[in-house]
Length: 379
Length: 203
Image 1 (spheres, one colour):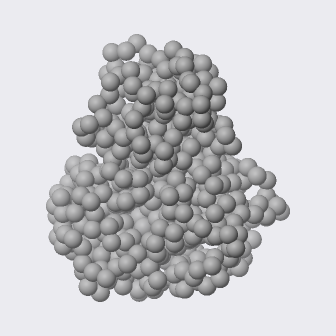
Image 2: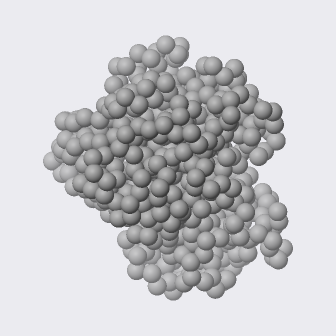
Image 3: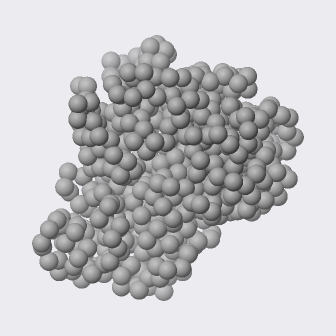
């Protein structure tokens, strides 16, 4: 069995998984209007980690003079915190790192800020992150747009099939910058207010910064009750459009169908979906969930708590959902006031109790990629 | 699991090789456009792509050409896996120029969309109507062992029967591409292994 032995979220809602979960359960968000941020000519709604807070926390664990970027600090801090209670030696040969990110240090293209030019490469950051923990295995780097964090967990399942690997540390991280925000603005994809996933009046997404780490180990022994098992995962491509979601949800449906091979819809406590709050994404998901027979299962999106955290999203949202199922809670979709997707789905407007053992995480993104992961809470 | 390479294409700044044969390229415009014309491909979307997507498109197209690959029916059992060193930095640099100065600020969605490396896997999936998994990995330099393990990992999904697997690097006008078409239970005697991939890359 492959199961979670530790995790951490670094986000504007807190620097531990529990802090983040408590904030979400009580309906908090740090998504707010940012004016004159990153030198952007246009304001945007987003969720940004305060540099001073991050630097302060990071200085407690970094005892060298080596300079790290914000992206690297977020990633390292999340791994460090996740390791704390596990007893795992991250420098061991049997430990493998997986990095999920869309853009890494791309902000350095604007101004290198004293860093060497190779620092804009994802592999360079990955090396520095692994080196911080003394790990010498080559990091597996996944850059699969919005599904990166789910694709990375599918990689975890595959890496752990290898005899030599006992533990995989998967970290998802992305920082915001003029580069990323201006691009989404040019797409006209951003909402001018707090996003409204699955709402009739949704108009677009909010962006957010986060790093999130899950440590997975494998065992043949029984694990403690309330552990979270990563059961299986699958990906599929829409083969339809490079940036627009499929109009039918065929690719996402295919991924869900593969991930659900061993269980029935009734066994699923909730589906933590992508729910970016763009018109097309949420409609597409509603069609795919309906095709998969999940239209009556509770569905939520966490985007109106954290924003869309890009390469971190799949890992971060898995952690929140894991804590929720242990807490027997299906979380609501924040800021959902009136449901309005092309196919009616059971998107939650209030937190509610759940008793089933499984939850599903789904993601879709640019490049036509889709992913579905199935998790189980142990008894 | 015996995986075999049915066909391959190698592209660098100097040459194009498909299944051990060097392809003659008529040099008229830019290298990638010249390859497109020389290979008699007709796919107008090519001209909208960034250099990375063009490189991956051509690599996959030329690797599949000798197989008379069916591009018309939806195939749920074929995966597309790509990897490289520089992610989408070539297009990232182009996009950065459009936002560098607020006096000359014109962010374009048509440029921004290619700032995601995995768009190339999307382009290849659309062209070939493949709905298996698509994945994009980054590594410091071409590594035959990693290349093989990424391809093999796609076949761990038992539904997958074939994989279009490529190294696709384009940055600072340096084009470096190796595409393979790999199948499960191959009848071909070119087995997927580190030595074979090493040899094909160094052709």
